Image 1: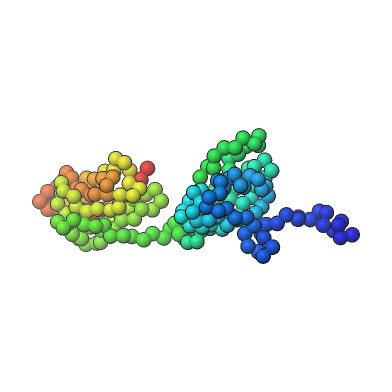
Image 2: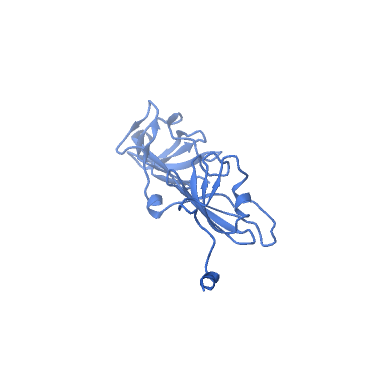
Length: 216
């Protein structure tokens, strides 16, 4: 009777007997995929922070779901609370291919909340009516503020990380009169205003850096 009761039941484990991760991947173990494809089904994992397959230098607790044809995915959170997902592109014939890469999952609240940072201004530059700030938001660079600066010299800096190899050039309106100038954003993060087309060049009192620019 007891045997018949469990014949149609699910007998494989998702966690260890003590409720902890079912499997462990140590720092010097083979790739995560090499281990996962030998355990089809649903399993929980602890992956050591020094393992080269991880997206960050932080240990992860993960859940994997793999079918018998070695196709599946793994999702996990690291010690800082960031959540990532990855999947195997191994096909139904058993030909092992590469992982499509870790993708970080971001909530709407996290994506919509941005923290503006101050642009580092050169000594010859100053803030006008509004603080001069920037934020890198996804694949966009946002600038805002009123800048007082001399043209044709470096007037400020932002971090170079994520900027295009050839930099950016955007048109910015001037204050004090009607007109525009060009703002160069170099790959190094340096900022420079150049050129001027205005109704009254001598009436220019500053530059409005209210722009949204693609980084790719």
